[in-house]
Length: 258
Ligand code: CO8
Image (tube, rainbow, N blue to C red; front, side):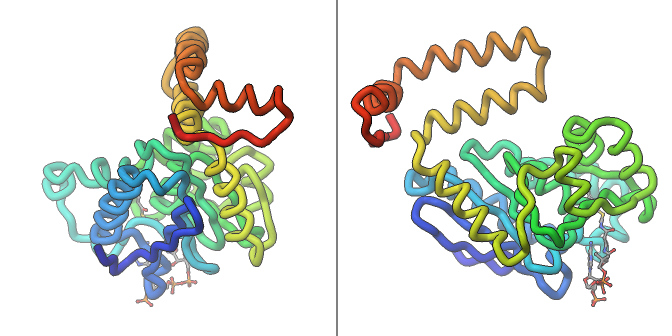
């Protein structure tokens, strides 16, 4: 399949997806999001892919949903098509580990897309924001929900109500971003992190991701029970046997993804 708005490169078992609409600062058009959703389906089904890095350009990870496409849509247009949900949430439901590598603007839907990844590595040039209120609308792909869970009510309210942008340092301080790196090291660092994950057992990494995500969907007692059941289930895998045997035998494990 060829993509008009995305670039795909494989680095070993890591898929690097680059949003590629430079003329519109990677504004997330319906065509781009449909392509991304289809590509994620393909990557999820491909055993040769263990992890994903999603990035944009130096100037913009993504400047939001495509305002030019959206501006004349009616309520019925967005309601009947259930605008956003299907293709946007595909990244959030992607089962393999995913990292957003953010440089420049990550605004509106761009910030929401980054937050759908498992974690965000940001260049020192990154700027995050939910400026929808300045356009007479509100975030519609998790901005009021994920951002609030990630950085707390005070900062989320500040961002969502004023539309102000947050720089990379503040984003790192308040936990939106896991690592802050110089802009020229962004892709290298993100690929190295994803490469490290790709060395682990793929099904175990999926379980670890699923369990952390559960923390955002349920209460503590239920989450702990869920984690324990998944933990127990790792003992049914060959990779748990291999990982622990390798430790005892003082060698590197050779995981077989079983
Ligand atoms: N949509 C469409 N085109 C855009 C967008 C966008 N979000 N952002 C930038 N562009 C276009 C500009 O129109 C311009 O095109 P042209 O040259 O044809 O005029 C080109 O990209 C370059 O942009 P600027 O000239 O504005 O570049 P600057 O460096 O001056 O400014 C900014 C950069 C600050 C990022 C500025 O472009 C900006 O404010 N962009 C809009 C940011 C924004 O409001 N984003 C939120 C959009 S709403 C949203 O995301 C709702 C999410 C709902 C869920 C998601 C559903 C899909």
